[in-house]
Image (cartoon, rainbow over all chains, first blue to last red; front, top):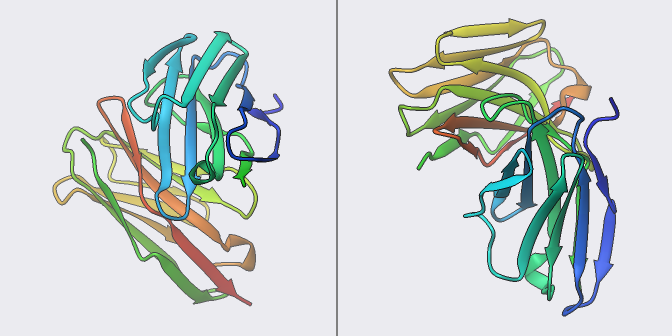
Length: 113
Length: 110
């Protein structure tokens, strides 16, 4: 398996623009997680899905953030409108079970100017 | 909810020496404790994990110990090598809530 795939790897955009991050989990994994990593706050869980259904989105910072998982092999995290404080590395991870190893993707480095 | 504290935040050792990173957790319901290694420009990668029914686990130069009574667990790396240099994260899972420590930047000097 190729592992968790994320795109794009880097994104530079201007404040106010819409940003869409994409993730393909490992085939057969029932759980998908979106994390944000910053120097100040470390790794933060934003939202996770089980069998394509959002289970816990309490980590989503505000209404500007939304996530979808239309099928078992694809998820998106959207920020609209983006702000400079959204600049961070966004990771997607997947696992077989909730209490099981999470496999992380390479991340998307987002810079909002 | 769970709170995970990790120490030290930075650690520098000489090649061949041992490195120890410690984490404490607050929720006694925590039952799964993974350790991740993150190299520059990459996502965290699992290096070892331990469950609450085990006190110690070893994989070659890496070992993890768990003290449930004291609510702390530690990562031990022996015979460190320059390629061990990275940021290491501990995590604890309780009631479907996985919390990560703030990370330890380990530097192994050749």
